[in-house]
Image 1: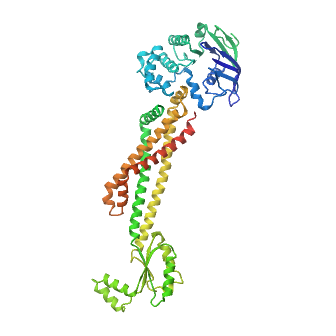
Image 2: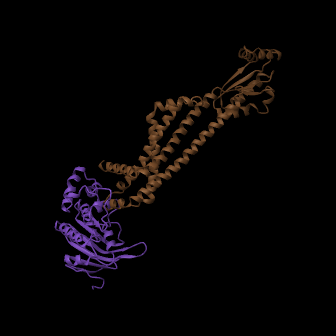
Image 3: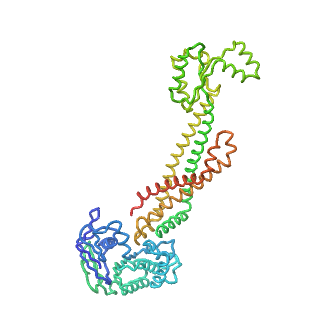
Length: 230
Length: 304
């Protein structure tokens, strides 16, 4: 599903963010990526969403070789991947339903299709009754659910969750993780980055630890460890 | 089509959402387009007024008594050679006297003065011009040193009696007004371009989160830029409609008063005959300003 083959990313200021990274993620996997700030997690995600372009190596996502895509293809690439962030990134002046529908609107979906898909997706994330609410009327956990609904509305094969629990209390954080697990059970590959030790340890799923742009640990049913394996 | 519709709806929503910015941008666009259309009206009306005056201008070149037919032909040819002469009419001494008598038939003093001078009026060429601006060229040609001895020494040239100074002043005045209108139009074109540029720049800045989300969910560049472009064309369109309404109010409402000073008849007829053309041209200019300004702002501040 995702293949990083000796991928290196060097920023224009000569900072090496990723150095010869090798990573293979299978379809339907639930993978957690951990690492201290500046380890290269964000760069890895930006390469997947094509916000950044790798400097060397090969990157293949869902069978698509990123070396072959042009600027025109980038929106299409992004439509194949769902992404949620710590700060939710919702449109504050649009209702919950409109936020979710927005992802379909940009891809040219018809109104009838949108009207059918949005309530279903809100039901999946447990927000069926909040379709008409504005983001500021929701709790942090609910906002993150809206973001997840928006990311999933186009039924992507891959969902990237970049610190999705960073702004949430433990109860809401666990609810979001349970939702991600549920989505994974439906067949979506989930890539989670987090600093939350309890969550990583409790998940008992594959954990990849990155440090200074390299993978220093890759364990099935791994645990959260800091640099040096402590 | 569906995508285009969504882009237009988003642009219209942005237009109404930033009411103050939109009002300011539309207001300056209205001022600019009003200046342009008023310049057009004044240009057209002044041109008609001057044409009306200059059509009546006749340059009279008075001839010295006793010059030969060859000398008369030389003067006539020299006048024709300027290329600005529509028609030259030769007026004999007798014709000049009869015209004078006819004109002054109710003025015994003038008639007596003619008698006292021995019924002596010079023959002349009446020159009708093609272009008012060439008046001086024709006068210069007639006043050349070799022709001077052939012309009447007391009063060699006259322009429709004593109208010369007045006409020249009107010509200079109208040229100034037309030039002023052009300069004001250009200045306000630049100002409105800068203001719309700034409005779009601010819109990009205030909507940077929205733009980021659009990119995130896979919006194309066109889908992101389209609303800004449409928003700017709305400034132009609304400004054009208001400016055109103001112009019609000026022409139709103020027409009777204006008619005392300038000839607005032809301009009014044109405006009432082609309202679609007028508003279409105004909207086109407004949209062009909007599109140009927003493209400029996006190229600088909207990196996708």
